[in-house]
Amino acid sequence: MKRMTPPLTDGDVAGLRVGEKAELYGVIYTARDAAHKRMVEAVERGEGLPFDVRGQVIYYVGPTPEKPGMVIGSAGPTTSGRMDKYLEPLLRMGLKATIGKGYRGQKAIDAMVRYKAVYFIATGGAGALLSKRIRRSEVIAYGDLGTEAVRRLEVDAFPVIVANDIHGNDVFEEGVKRYARRTLPFPVERKVAE
Image (tube, rainbow, N blue to C red; front, top):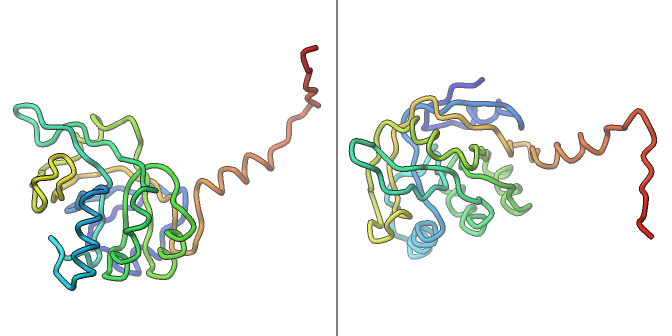
């Protein structure tokens, strides 16, 4: 298991391979659809972003409101494909990793190869458990977006798996190939109901 602390470098992500487990320590940022739209529009206007994305990790999450005495509510990953159209401008600025669930489109994978970035997946449906790895949460931009505001999170041993590496490999594609190579030790006949 790799232990990683952002900001990440090209060297940090170069050693990662699909299927490999990692733990993140330190600061990561949150952003979902609405926040990504605003950030990319700001970039297109030549304006600054709410945080310096160089070497950073963005977690695709919209946490639920925290209960009294808690740092954050349930903080499970959201589907990443919705952020694909916003990914390349942020990678161009130095973003090194994203976290979410589900696969990425080919354009996003190609952009990760081009800019040496990785995509991590976190366990969907485990938001309550993942929130226990978050030590601090602070809204830093777009507070009007509520749960979709940009947050600065301090995490400790936040568990992720490499889904896309800088070499263009895809854990989902690898899984399909592995499954297709398996053969059963007996013939299977399909019976069709008459």
